[in-house]
Image: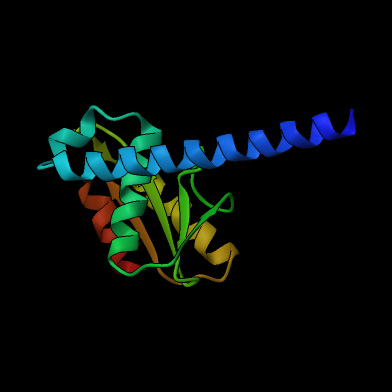
Length: 134
């Protein structure tokens, strides 16, 4: 009976590894087909987040996911010195200053002094002013 559970556990681990490899392949294939921001609109948030993470990795960032900042797992720590929040909104969506204020609060609480908001939308003038003054 113990042998049966051991074999079942090994098969489950193999399944998880194969599933992870297939998902990474899917993300790499999606990256090849993306030509504009409009292409990102039709992705699920999980796929959008995975593509952003892959692009950051290819640009030399060391990435860790964090629950300290970001909503619904959208927070990242880049190179252990920078917070990044990922938001998927429409192209015409205007991001308000509260998002930058929440990011600043998270950064201050965790003693991180650099932050980045990644979104498809644009920022209100007040948010740009807030980011400059920080």
